[in-house]
Amino acid sequence: MNDIQLLIFLILFLSTLVRSTFGFGDAVVAMPLLSMIVGIHIATPLVALISLTISTIILIQNWHLIHFKSAKLLIFYTFIGIPIGLFMLKGQFDNVMKLTLASVIILFSVYQLAKPKLFRLVNDKWISLFGISAGILGGAYNTEGPIIVIYSALRQWEPIQFRATLQGYFFPVALMIALAHGLGGLWTQPVLFYYAWSLPFVFMAIFLGGKLHRKIPTGQFDKYIYICLIILGVILFINTLTH
Image 1: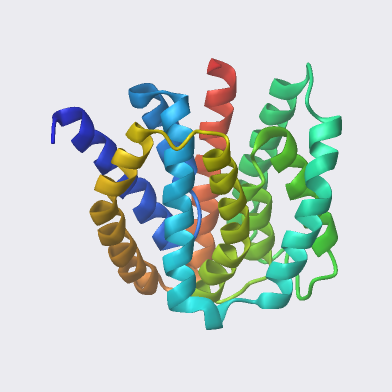
Image 2: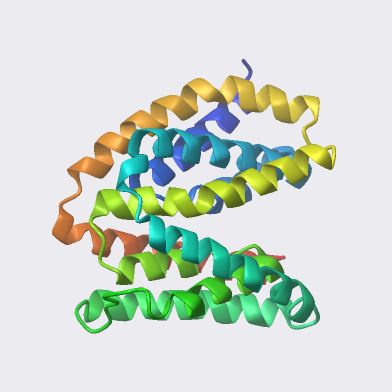
């Protein structure tokens, strides 16, 4: 194992640790770093395979904790929104929309940290709005995650149910993306090599992330989620400005 390979595995370890601890965020950590090292054509299918692996393991461990009604509705409405995003939002205003999304994520999360009791969702009344919005953003910019995380946080689920339900949503999405990569010929020898050799690091990170997740006080979990969303928004903002 050379230094470059070790660095790749450590990046995947860190991104998996974030995902296993909070339920999301692995691609935001891994994609910018891996793209600089191995290029986008290896990083994209590799991160998708890792994401599918993480979702599968967490679901096997916690499937009984998923809020199935919400997960199914979110998936359904997201699929409605995806073609709308593909049709309407691809064009000359891509960067403006991404910067707007990043700003909304940051400002909303800061506001929720300052006044955490103001916005709450007690049922799935608004789930169609969040699901379709996520689908539009996912179809246009591959950024459906933050909207789903915000919805899940506003529902005030217990941390372990929050984490499990997110995997229930992300699993079918990750499965379709990974299969599309495979059918498109993106599962090249380097991708499969890095994936296979990264699995020990990924399994270790999933185990440690589960431990860290259980140590986060329930009353503080929302705070950590919104801090993660702020970081995600900042990364999206910077990536948009620099590309």
